[in-house]
Length: 419
Image (cartoon, rainbow, N blue to C red; front, side, top):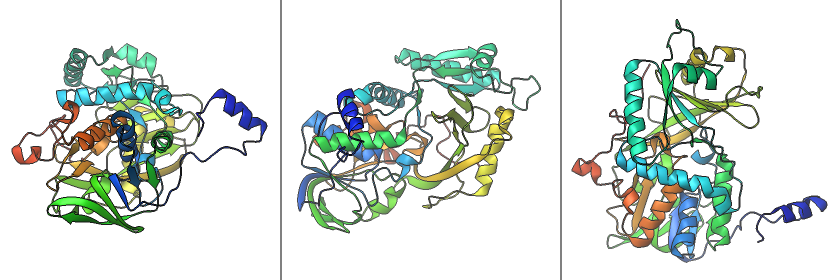
């Protein structure tokens, strides 16, 4: 398969775009592989890509019960940032940011990464102090951060309600200029194509129905398309982590599955040229290249495996948007969707070995799944290939909950706010 370039773009344009090849193959599953990755979302595909690129392992299969990018990868608000404070998170997400910055060139696929900045609004002097503390921690770790006063916020976000008698007056904020957005579908397609080019088999419509375990060691998976033997198995299935891991005999995990909704409005003229987050409530909003406003907020306050939303959350998120941007009142909601999030008990992910030998787990991403895609895949690939975590995910072990070494970024855990 040829690389994408201006030359084959022009050539295919002259032929009416009839000669493009499929971005990746659709092979039948082989009887055995060295490594099987369960889950064809961004994290699973990135893991396979980096296993091939960084470790030279190509006898790999990614198996997906549906279609590539049909899960959470296509059900998020596309925000990318690395503005974390605790060392374990700071270094991990910053490595991810560096991978984002070179991803389109590395994959030979335009993932539409736009470094338009991410602004966190502050509404009290106490919040400004907290942002100053986080920003200082970020800058000490080599991560970009800017503390913004009220006038600078007004200049950068002219649509905000900056009046002194606003319900939540804005006193300033913090910005990570290198943060921004990326096209979620393009990230999945780019990693799928990149992995396929390196010999990885991507097998869609192949659901895992069980694990083959012999003497405490995983030796393969049972699927809707037959048994597949494997020397190692990695699981990256987001909100369905607990269900899949139960098939391997791991009955209890420190995670819960919750629904998180996202929304997009009808296209409007340029209004928001950055990412804005509402600090007193919970809202994050940006504007897509098509003009639609993409936004989200709190997750549903109950456990669910349903990929559909409900009216109370729509009302809550819309009210937050109206609070900060009153001029959105007459904009029509175009569509909304839901993703299933696996919420860890400390709000920090798990990239780790499991009690079952040669079975590895990638999960517990809470709100951070999309932005973590490249770093997650890179670290999970290292963990699977070497059998030990990289220093970037050394703190993200499954047994940290048993040992009490939790990594609680905000000091509140992942508990949903109930209104």
